[in-house]
Image (cartoon, rainbow, N blue to C red; front, side):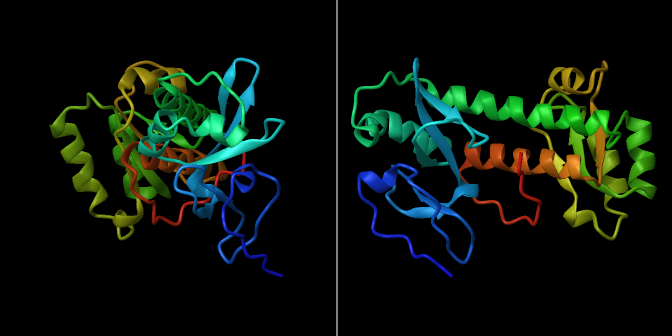
Length: 226
């Protein structure tokens, strides 16, 4: 049975309980005062040291929800939305949006590390080129410093695949970040093959991209349930 969300109030800005809709569980964004799917939002709780992002939605206590974009979170800080929603003075870092972005980057790279340990990441130009011709590849990763000629060559191989348009291009991370996540050096190019750990990485990557750009993600990637 569907339960329709009531009109937003100061109280319903807090996560008093699930609200079901045709698209899944919803919460009210404390900035826009509109109900949205929790997949489009980030939960924040009031901790001893101030406001804390709850990316996994598991921290205890009452929380408020903000549309998961850097612009919306910056507006929440400027408008003092947290103090108004929690009805008390709270320490809110002025760079909360930047802090949240760093946490999203870390969570995404942690997921890549798990995918790598599970055997779903193929690093190295030659191996990536081979994987694109025979494996079930779901994403192609290029370090932000990758040379244009290398990217162009792998793109040419990618275009030969009938499913080329469905393969996600990831250029958001530096080679140093890829090195650290995968536990090896000089990772400039990598391919991500199909698997549950790969789905988790892609879900977190799309969440990071939505946060940075504010653009909705219309892909059919699996949700991150972790």
